[in-house]
Structure formats: structure tokens, C-alpha cells
Image 1 (cartoon, one colour):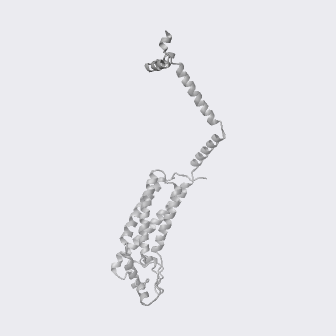
Image 2 (cartoon, rainbow, N blue to C red; image 1 turned 45 degrees about the horizontal axis):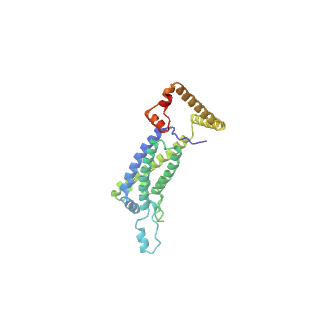
Image 3 (cartoon, rainbow, N blue to C red; image 1 turned 135 degrees about the vertical axis):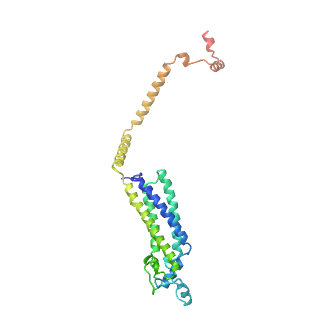
Length: 269
């Protein structure tokens, strides 16, 4: 069993490249707009005002009351914002590399399956981070960010409605990117399995190679045949040319013969 190197449906692969390009550009734009902290803290505070989640001021409260410093939830951390930007840039770079390799016919299904499995894991972390819970405040636990679980109209401040809509759109684009990259995996696995025609051609090639190895005199016989053909051809060409033309006497030949003490013209006289 071997893995095929050709895609069974290359047009579908090209279509996925275009969908991936659009999604990556959208993700880069949305994550870039949200960075470094355009909506995150405002939405965190808005959810706290409505009693949906913890407060961004809980660290100050902990310092003031000499309590243990709570860990910032992943959903409200700057790490998640930076992480989303990094994977978006990485996805764009990978897309450019894939397009070049596909044009050069070196983008194999096996390589695609391995690489897209890694990218799916990266985007799955992003999806989990954007929908992660907030249990840092026991009095206001949150299983999921309020702007994903509730309509944006419930925002405590109307100025945060736009930010809520932007975060909803960002989460939707992330889901689409995860689905596109995941679809590459079964498509690659399907293309890795060779068709009947490819298997038959492979078996024929292996049988011919085995027959060549089993016949040790095949190479020597071939070489002898080429030598025999070359000798006969040369003999035919020489036999068809008169002896005087085959051994012509030129001024250079006469000079060398004179130096060696052999003058053919005098010897003939």
C-alpha cells in the first residue's frame, strides 16, 4: 500500500484555497481591529455591570483587601488577542506556501493532511479561548462570554453594542476557518488512497522492475547488441568509402611523415 501523490479533485482544492484566502483576510482584519484592547476590557466591564461575569477591577480589590490575586480568565486575557493575530498571520503564510507548492505539483495529500491537522488544533484553541468560561468570581460565574450567549441589545452601555457585534463576527469567522481547515483533512485522506488505475499502473511498474532484476544478462546482452550494431554501422560506413579517401594525404600528414623519415610520395617513385 502506498500513498498517491496526485489529487483526485484538484478543482475542489483550488476552491478551498479561495475560501481560505477570504476567511484569513477577514480574520486578520477583525483580530487586528480588536488589538490590543479595543473591545475586550469594555465588554468585560459591561458584563460585570450586568452581573454576567467577573469584574476587571477584581485584581485591585484583591490587592486592597490582601487577598490572593485571581488569575485573569482566558476569555479576557491579552494572550488570547495576541494568539489570534499570530495564527491568522501564520495561516496566511501557509496559504501562500501551499499555493506555490500546488502550482509546482509538490503539494502532496499526505503533507496536506499532516499540516492541516496541526492548523486545526491551533484554530480549535482559538475557538475554545473565545468561548471559554469565567469562574474567577464565584458570585458571578460565566460558562461562556455574554456577548456570545446573549443578544447585543442587553449591553449595559449602548457604546458597547458595536464591540459586541464585532466579537460575534470574529467568533463566526473563527468557526468558518476551523471548518475549512478541517475539511482539508478528509479530502487529503481520500486523495491519498490510490484509484484502481493507479494501483494497476503501480503493480505493472513493480513487476517490470522485478523482471529486470531477475535477468542478470539483460544489461550485458543489451550492451553487446549496441556494440555489435555500432561496429557493423562503422564497418559499413568505412567499406563504402574508397581507400584513398579513408587515408587522405594532407600537407600536415606529409610534414609529420617527413619528420619521421617517411615520405610516401618518394617511396612510391
